[in-house]
Image 1: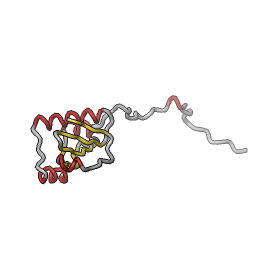
Image 2: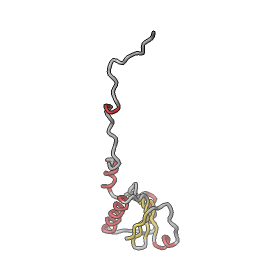
Image 3: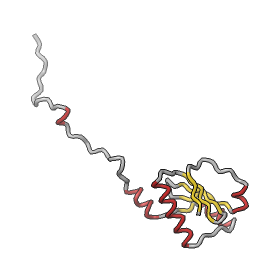
Image 4: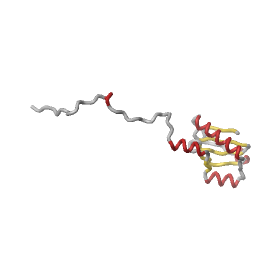
Length: 121
C-alpha cells in the first residue's frame, strides 16, 4: 500500500498567508505628484499655433488657467476645452499638456470633439 507524501511543515491556512500590500485606489504615484507640481506643458504643435495666431496670455491668466486645469483634473476631466478672452485651447488634463490653440475667428467655426470638460475664463 502506498501512502501519500506528508508535508514536513504543517499546512498554512489562507488567513495565515502574508498578503502583499496592494496600492490603495486613493494613492497617487510620485510621477503624478511631480506632474501636478510642474504645471501645464505646451506641446510643440500648440506652441507653433500660438505663435502663428499671435495668442498670448499674461502671467496672471496663465496661472489662472493652470489652477482651473488642476480643479478639472480633481473632478475627473481628462480632456478640456479652455476658453480665454475668445481664444481657445484643447488641453489634455490627464497629461497637463496644451494640445492645440485657436484664435477667436477660428474657434467660432469649429466643432470640438473628444473633450469631457470645458473651462471658461
